[in-house]
Image (cartoon, rainbow, N blue to C red; front, side, top):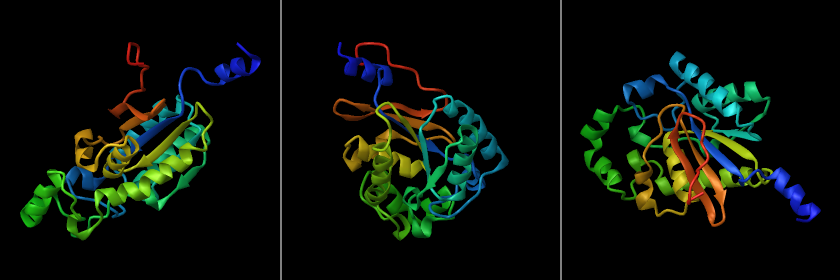
Length: 224
């Protein structure tokens, strides 16, 4: 092995770049099952505790950068990791949750009662402007480029933490994996303060962990 190859091997311990997409902690509207969208709802005490616990785990991965939605529930979640790592947070409104117009502030039951046909079409995977708001593809159009731009700045084995919202994370993952928008719902949601991990593979980004609350483990086997 050449000196250059040996140096590269030392810098790259068996993996490429990694993106951790971390959902914010619990809010009162989460508990009430109200659609938040772009409404700025703060963390509950439980949400702050969730963020602190998760931040201790994620800090052990020695992230290189943190980028966050500017809504307070995400920004305050990100602040817990920043406090442990000393990393500055880049806030970007493009990482906000889906704008859902008339749905925002309504409970799940109220949405079904008032917008039942629209809700059913959305769940079938049809392109729907929920409450007159954004399409899921439009959310991916604004959020995925932010993630890619920051990932490109990482060292070859670096880790980026993206702090955002359930819907935005799901659509962003779908876009980065190259999935058809109709199939994004198959990814499922994220619990408060859980995360998904994308790893850089030979043919693009791969989903390594989804809706995780513990540290990612290496894949030991034929599919590594």
